[in-house]
Structure formats: C-alpha cells, structure tokens
Image (cartoon, rainbow, N blue to C red; front, side):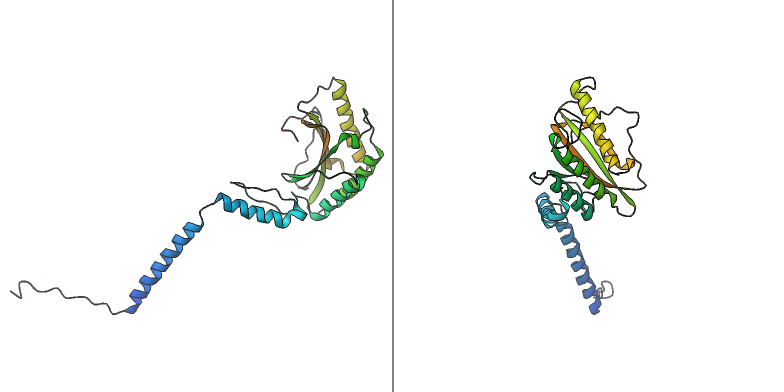
Length: 235
C-alpha cells in the first residue's frame, strides 16, 4: 500500500530573499497606485495653482489666468521683456499722468487702450502735442531690443460694432487718422517693418496700442495693396 500511494514530498523554502522580493514588489505596486491616484486632474486644484502663480508675478508680468485644458505660458508680460514693458508704461504715464492705464495681455502682445481724443484734435487727423510727445517716447522705447528679436507696435483705431464705409465722412476720417499715425510713428524713427496701423471693430472712439517682440526670422506682416479695413474679432 505504501508503495502504491506514496506521499508527495513537501517543499520547504528557507531562502529569505524570496520574502524580501515579494515585499518590494508589493511596495512598488502600492507606489504606482498612489501615483495614478494623485495624477488625476482636478479643475479646482488647477485653477488654484494658476491663481497662485498669477499672484506671484502680477506686479511684473500681468499674466492672464489660464485654466481648463490651456497651458500656462508666461515668460514675461506676453512676450515683452520687463525693460521694454516698463518703458512703455512710463511713456503712457508721463504723457497722460491723470489717466489710469488700461493695460491687458492679449496673446503674445500687451495692449494699451486710450481715447482717440487724447491723440487727435477734434474732428481732425491732426495729432495733439501731448500725443506727439507720447509717440516720441514710445519710439525711443522700441529702439532698444533683445538679441534675435524685433520690437513691434500695432495701432488699431476702433470703430464701434461695424466698420464704416470708406466713402462716408466717418470712414474717411478714420483712414486719414490711421495714415497720420503711421507717418508720425515713422517720423519718430521707428523702422517701417515694426509698424502696423489699421481699423477694427471695437469700443468706438478708442485706440488700441499693441506692443510685441517678434523673432527676427519671423515674416513681416504687410497690408500693401490691401484695403485698410480689417476683418476679424473686435480688439
């Protein structure tokens, strides 16, 4: 009987390294489970983190809060270095000391909005003396540059909800004012490839100044041969 039903021998493992390996494996498994848990996106946590960053850099970079699926990209105020941004701010503050600056980061540009009455004489394309001083200071600010980049200024005369026809008195005045501004900026010494002017829908009776720094290798936007009226969202 014993030979017909032999007992199976018991296998005993006395090597402690097996237990150690099993323990390390369980620790790694728990670690990866933890990573998976804390990597889950939380909209509230994302907004809080972005808000904290914005608060830390608000005095210099005027970073806009970006949430959701957007990526926070803020090497400075838009793409302006601090020196240029400070000079532009000082130019507006010096020209209009009693006016509060209306400054906004738009994409890779910094926008300043002022009343058209502060730039032009009433009902005329003639430029005010204070505005001429402003443009001279802005031209001096744009003269400094960062290696590999060019400073650009874009001036947009805003026309209200709709763009007026060039055949109307209002439309002709806006075109004449845009041309006068372009000539004045060029006369102050700003290079032609760094200046853009035009009309766009937006708060009537206001002018938006956009400042940006563009890579020297980037193409220059030119509206030569095109209508001065632009299509696109209001600015």
